[in-house]
Image (tube, rainbow, N blue to C red; front, side, top):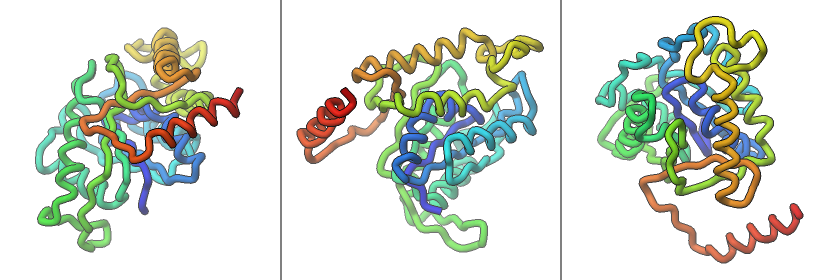
Length: 252
């Protein structure tokens, strides 16, 4: 199955927290979108592997994804080495995305940066024909390199290189996040049990505030930010600006 955009997260819920609005935008436009979870999040304090799978499936349904797959790497202990790169290369060649959304390259959680670098390396290597891989049916895969790898901004703040308006899909985005009932403060009894950095009401408030801050950067209510190691070029910037101004005028 070919996807337009493939979002890769080291833990189930990483994508929802930082890039789900962008995915929903693309799905609403008719573009195929999918999520690749690298681990099962088995080291998480709250919930179990089974609940994480159920929550991930629910979130995928909310976002309207075409596919969601888990590579079952070891949470906390995966490496950016040949073994793990080959698994990601196989997935990239399988879905042939034009754009990959990946973890940020440096963050509070060490898994995020390591996963981000793993995806960057695998995305490049996936374009080399002399690296041979096979699919689930034992057939050789064709080389594939996505046009762009964008890193979604997570816990630490980075000045974004690209900001995506998610105002129209914000409520749907929050619904996808709240699908992870064991991880976030989703109900009054959510305060029961061991509390974590992300399970308090303050975390969700900070998440919404971040979306507002990103939105303010481009004059909208809510947005998601991305950074990239590669410059994004366009042939007709004035046409893009004209379209933006026309859209803004229609909204008013």
